[in-house]
Length: 467
RNA sequence: GUCCCGUUCAUCUAGAGGCCUAGGAUCCCAGCCUUUCACGCUGGUUACAGGGGUUCGACUCCCCUACGGGACGCCA
Image 1 (cartoon, rainbow, N blue to C red):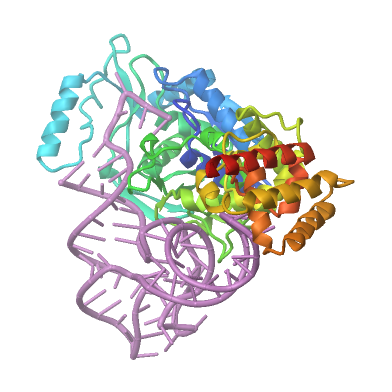
Image 2 (tube, rainbow, N blue to C red):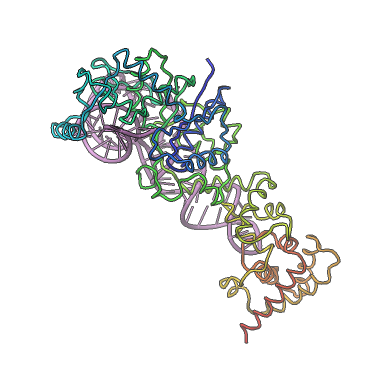
């Protein structure tokens, strides 16, 4: 049987990292087994579903590169079909109308809680033969006896007694079907073979299995992945800062780095930390998914992102960096080649936002020299050293790394001082104090004109301070 | 409250009864490298929730307790 998995978010907000990881696992599983991956929008909650959320989810999936083979399907387009199934259930006597009031249900619930029982519907209407003409909901007639067992692909065998389950509503009083019904109908119709979803659905699984069996359908396999917790141990939410996938894009994370971080959250392959997408596909395995929930840790994400910035193709990083330079008001085409800048700076930043910030000086003069660096370096004979090196740099025939390096070395020799006596003031003069690579490379990228201009400014600053 | 699920360093995890005086990674600290900042390298602190079994032997299997999470909705 061909493997088919799905991701089925409800469009009530953006795509968050928990959902993204579930989607990733489903996608990897399908890819790993040469199967199909389906995207289905579960928008049966008319009140809360929005088109903006659908767009946000699609955007997040696209950014992460989790392309789907089928869909997106919308449950709101399939109401007629759900109603057919519900009608079939009614005809078979496996569902019934119920007109219990909110008040009765609330009272029942309170009584059960007081009696230390699990609150559940008591089947009051199951044989009352309520007329279709009066307001009602339809409930599924859950088996009263026996138990439901399934072998979860991640957690092993799970058994729940039918006596723990109640007759759930499958059609609301407004005629719309509910989640537990639609999810079963869709997973069946779409031929889903492995249902991979968050473990908050474990409790729904037995009643869904009962629905499959009532319809005489094959039951798919289930895999419940543990939740992602915030750093305070509670379920990850907006309170914990960035949880929207697109926010990570804005903050300068590479999609492949986020994917790498997410795949390692709950899954492992020995001691390996870094996985290309192709490796993930090759190695991913539900059996190796952890059963315990895990905590989202930005430090580690940052490290992984840094590894990607450092080791990925510089042209690729430059393309992703460009918009972040734009955010700083810099047009990278008006200055040194951004790819060369990336090669020079990339091991000094863990996000693209940082990389942009520490690379701005290649493209424009900085506001001021870093005060701490000034205090440390712009003193003594620094102005003379700068004047001497400036003269040599100005006289260079070609503005090339080797020539620049020689000019600095010659200045050092002529002055009879240590390398740092010239190099340090020069570096601060040209960079303002930003992290930077080898001096000759730095000057080369900044360019002769800007370098000399900044050296003059540094000399003036030193002399002002002295005066 | 009831039911379901879970519990190895601060965090992500390795571990399928002896290979474990518990390994890797992040974080933190120290040192090395060094013209800044990094990168890199070396080293260090830190964990099997507790208690009972089973076994010659338990991080690994079973039970209990504790703690955490989830579900209990005309949300998904």
